[in-house]
Structures are given as structure tokens and as C-alpha cells.
Length: 298
Image (tube, rainbow, N blue to C red):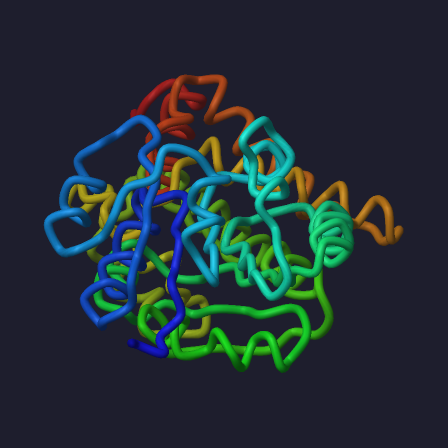
């Protein structure tokens, strides 16, 4: 009998599919659950995964359940809902939450899971679906080190960078801060690109001078591809999800409390883009949203 953990995966979308693919192809028994799109599920089934119909059924079949859903409402529904995970928590079951979530909710869920003998850790992600498919994500971890050590071989199936942030909730806190920095860079890059276009600056010249100096950022590298190549694939993260993440961050800073002037500006830019109809588009399309807000290029 294999001594490998039986893994359950809830959320096999853009990020989750690559993670699940690497888990099952590296020899771990895997159970998945479909949501709206069956295509990634069918692919995983062809690789040897099994399918379950509910979170409770996945928990019953697994030693480790990984969540990779949109945010806190979806996490709480998966845990507390009818046929949710909490109804099947037993001694030793581990739940690892890779979602971007509100840290206070994470701490509460962890306590409720612990009361039934299980373990709940936060394991949010960095990087993109491309790195998920390649098994090269970054993972922040929060929770008991012994529990995290037990599931580390599974995490290593889809990650090449693993950083321990502290107790439960610390990784989700770090994730919100990291996302603010990344999305702040994205907003600055998009706003500068639109200004440059209206000023008649050649996009090739803007790219070359920024990438050759101190203003360089990974987000700029990704976003400049929109005006140059009409390519938004380098940051496959929906503007509406980015809007949600920034609201989580500003709610957190408000409760600390610390000032967050820049974050509020980033959030409102994302709200504007969403209201203009770009919510389902990837973050590099902030360029197009700001073009629309400014009446189009002269």
C-alpha cells in the first residue's frame, strides 16, 4: 500500500488544474470535484484522478484537502455549507487553503476544524497558471510546522518556492500584502502606458527605457505586451478578482489601523475597470480600461 497522502482538490480552474495535474502525475491518489467547467476535470480523470460530487465526499476520501477557490465567501461555503467539509472532518484530516482569503475568517475556520480533530492551514499562491502547469508556483504557508512538513511533499509537486509566514492566518495576510504590491505596480504601469500613448511616445521606446532602468517591474513587462502585441496572457488574473483582493487588503489595513491611500487608489481603479465592463478580462487589460475612461487614444 502506498504511504502517499490521499489528496482531494476543490477548485481546478486556471491555477488549480496545473496544481492537480502535477499532484496526480507525481503519484498521489487524487479526488477532484467539478464546478462549472468540466474540461479540466475530464483531463484530470484521464490522468488517473477520481471524481466526487461534494466537498464532504472529497473529505471522506482524502487525508489532505486542497482548496483553490475565488475567495472567502467560496471558502466558507465549501467548509460550512450543506455537504461541506466540516461535516466530514475527522482526527488528522488536513485542509490547506490556497485561496486568497480574509485572515480573520481563516483563523475562525481553523479553530472550528481543530475542534473536530482536524488541521487547517493557509497556503496561498503566487505566480500564474503557466507556473502552475510547470509545477513552479510560489507558496506562502501559515500554520503548525509539523502539519506543514507532513504536506510539504504534496506542495512541492506544484511549487518551487515555499515560505513559512507564521501561524494560521499569517500566510493569507502576507498574500494580501504581496497582491497589493503587484497590483499597485500594474496600475502604475497601465496609467503610465496610457499617458505615454496620448503623449505620442513610441511604445517600443517606453519599453526599452523602463526595462533598462530603475522603473523596471515584472508587472510592467507583462502589461506593456498589450499595446505592443495585444497579448494579455502573461498575467492571467481577472480584474474582478483583483478588485476583490484589494478590498480584502484595504479592509485589513482599516482594522489594523494603518493608512492605505495608495491601496484605495488601486482599488478604485479596479472598480472603474470592472464598471466599464472589463471585470472578466485579465489585469493587463487595465490599459484598455483606462483608454476607455480617457476617451480613447488621440
